Length: 476
Image 1 (spheres, helix red, strand yellow):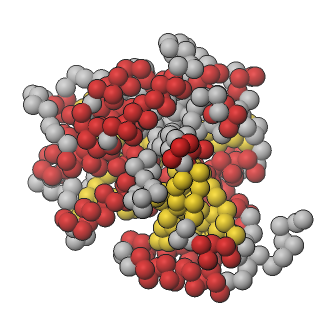
Image 2: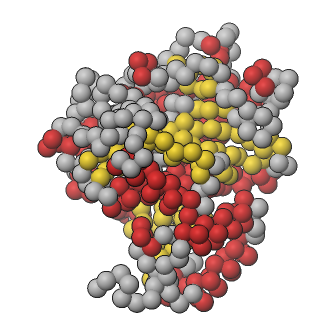
């Protein structure tokens, strides 16, 4: 049956952008949740051309899950959407499997029909435990609760902008077939800025940028990156939960658009040895009453005392956080100083090998840039742990903390040991979630060679949490 068999909704990109930007403003202005829910439910009831609502949520590792609900069913049951949590890696055990999805109506997106199909809209959900409280393993809900608490108690708005790099490889499902070929094939070998206007990489970037624009991302710039077939599509900052949602959408869109073109968009941190890896540079700021608390024109590098205290706390807890920011075997290939990798636990305005960089800014754009985040990190867990640490963590009593000769771990086993030993991680995540996350990371690591070596091993790709292969996940 063709997709256009019935008159399902298929809006133009201009119409999509207008609707999504309006929804984004409502979210940023913190319009009352009851008002937004009422408006969205009325819209769904009135718009006869919508057939289904896709509800998205993420598991403990950051893997995105999508559930399509028939619109008529959702209108009558949106407050009681149950699912089996035991089927989601890192969630509940079988004996306590019932969980619910609570729709976050402020995260409503109108989507291009040529990417998602006709007659669909998207919305993110948070996971609710059977006792009605937010589920501790759902870091989106944890992040949202923390963000709302800071706004309510201190007037703080947490802001993030993420620069997400990825690779475009020849063929669909290139990651799942890697064990057969033991290599990835580039679609472009031009490198940084050197791409012909209509070559495959540029065509992919242009298509992805148009979809992002239609979904209200407010694009800034896009370009091929340093490595062959590598890309980056930058967009504006957002409130922290919306920013994390956009990371998930960015990767989802890239994968689908690449598949439509016969390619694979990969967010492995270092899929090819010998060229630059992919990072997710994460720009962070905190505002209050629309004033950027990171800015001080008289401060060191024009960063305020508030901002430097934020930086010092993250540097102090760098080893505690490393597994969260670099959560796969493959991520530790990227932390190689020969390829501009940020493996040094220090802060600098110029040295790109530093974990934290201080970009040039002004009263609006002043921020700190955390460069050691891999693109496969759980965005909700990452942003929650980094903001929680920057605002509430402790500071090491160390002379020259910001320029000390300290380094991030060179392998995931060391990072797991630091994570397990960290009292701070226990404080922010709790024993149960901390233990589950470490166990998941160890299970994946034990299926890959302990020593990284000089070429990417099939097992580190096959068992990577972002490679969509349910048959392999079931072997864990």
